[in-house]
Length: 73
Image (cartoon, rainbow, N blue to C red; front, top):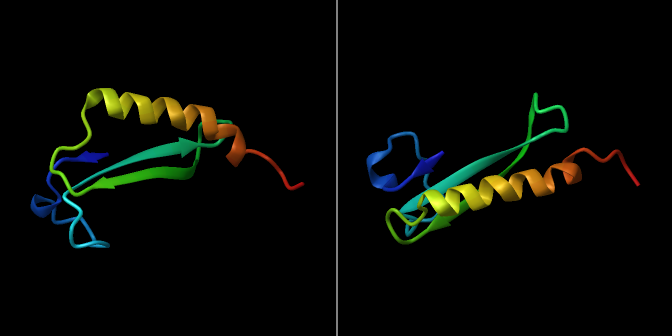
C-alpha cells in the first residue's frame, strides 16, 4: 500500500500529525501464505515514495523474510 496524501484517505489512523505519505510493504512467511510482518515507512512530504522506492522496499521484504521464519534460538 502506498498512499501519497494521507489527508485524503479516510482509512488512515493518525499516529503522527506531520505524516503526509506512508508506504506499507508486507513481509510474507517462508511459504508465502501469511503476512509475518510489515515494513512501514512514513514521510512528512506528500507523494514521497515513487515506484523505484516501492520496488526497493519490496526487494527488502524478500531479504528479511528468513528472519520471520526462524524458530527460536
